[in-house]
Image (cartoon, rainbow, N blue to C red; front, side):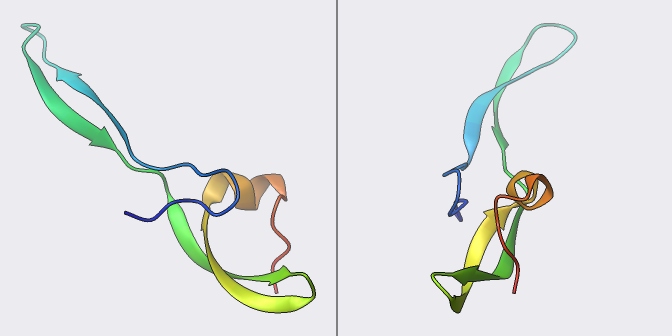
Length: 61
């Protein structure tokens, strides 16, 4: 699975709980995009989550 290069956000696991309170496994995946970024003056392609893109933590190329 891909992981955010900025905040290290990755897959989270938990339970899906039905109305009758039965539990089954489920997975929450972050919204990760492959983006061209400027790192130390050079262009690189990084996997970045959309919350980092929206907050401005990444300088896009």
